[in-house]
Length: 280
Image (cartoon, rainbow, N blue to C red; front, side):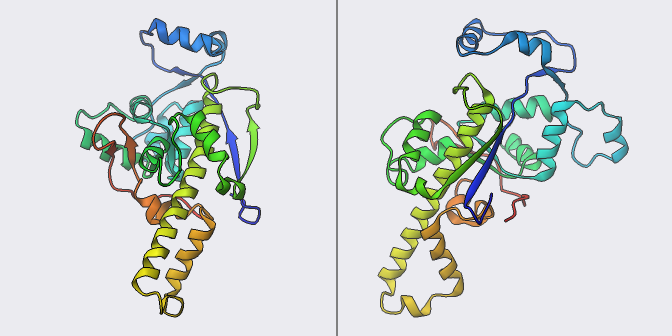
């Protein structure tokens, strides 16, 4: 995030992955057709895919870590886990299950155990689908669908989007469309997330400001604490720094909650947020 320019720098990467251990490959025919119809290159997958294996368990000795044969994708996931930065998904429960199974360990049978195990590895997660479904009308002012493409089109048309700049630095080109490129989908997810969070912060701070005015309209301008003043600035400026993702009440509401579609209460709570690695 370039604070002086209020610009978010986006870099999307895409890797084809191949399991390091030998296993039987099974696939659904309809899924294969869907991938082929949306531009997935099976030849490139078979020829250039990177092998992957599970990460060493947390708390392992350096000697044990060195003994493990590390591959390309292993370094990527290990870096994300070490940095303890937020993971952002869109309707991502299945994504989390796949990531945990392929890169961490066997999936715990109990959902509460899985939630605790996930947060131990990756302490902070957001789901853009949940952000949208919880604030669909009142916050995002959106009456359309909740797919990534529909959300991106709507949010980019809102006046708040004029204050947010994206610098798309690659390495992926801009000619790929959603569903044909995981990297493109990741970039769209990032853009939707930033615009959603920005609107949630503005909405929450504006509501808090109105409440303060109602309770003590005469003395509001003179008796606010310095903390309140900083909070009110957030209402004006929205997502002004990455650290608000950890500290702002509007963001804390969504910590480690992943969307559940057509099920009550509409989300799965993974666990308490641990200390992450956000700064700035």
